[in-house]
Length: 354
Image 1 (cartoon, rainbow, N blue to C red):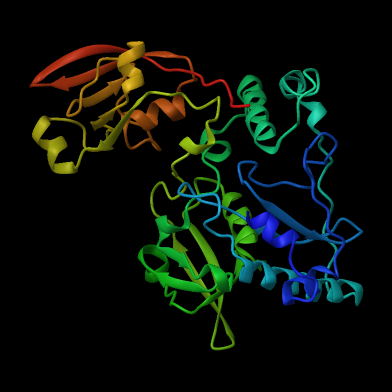
Image 2: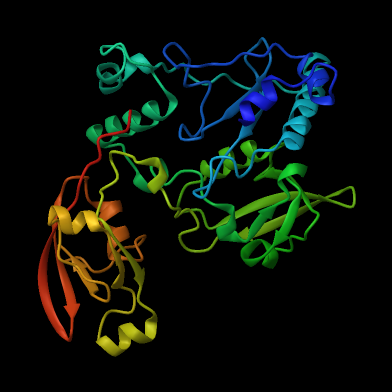
């Protein structure tokens, strides 16, 4: 619906007048698109690039969170992006905007599993299929970093950052880490670690590029017409997001939810303070139907295949997702009614939709 509202904008409307200064191209399938140049989180439902004939990308427009595909999309904010694109193009033509190195070309046909699933089957090469099968190849060649490649587009709400979406990168509310760093409502974010950003798409793209071991980042904001640099201390697991909507085939499906045990409960049960012991909060009906495990709500999972500590995982469920392959069988050590029991769990690999 949003795409239609943009494309069908009346020519004499403010948005239509802006769009009339562009050559607008809609890409319905990705068969021959250079995905090295047009890089982004492939699980976005809608994404725009504003670029020139020299293939210099001025800015991106798009982005989402786990709640909705259009959380950060609005007609007023795309008008801001269109106007900014024209401004940047003028600077480029006047030689006042530096030319960026072009990324190495990469094409969908370079990924055999994707070729088999799409080209060879006469099927459409869609963005989310590229996102999935590129990770399948990473898993096979040993280059997959699940924290980086699977847990994409970290949620800014984790660091307390909330946007006034129609106004672009204007901050609506600042809490948590960004508030501690000095951010205020009304600030306009203009750069991340010195890289200029003009839209939420720009900011999310660069934020996602941060190594998952990053502990600090610098955000530059415009406040009362002046730049202000803020040093943001990133909390533990700042990148951990709900990725279930992605339905990624490399994501082990466990069919239960859990929460980390508080420190006092670990102490009471004689468990390691830095361990990932966690309490089961929900068991999916699929687990019962497929007999993939016999967990119950209230069970405490102490370890997985003998491991009970991990530098990244804060729950047993998260440990499985990070350290095991989809389809693996594991053995859980579970506390139930004061007794420790061993329990097998079978994970599942989803066959990617479409």
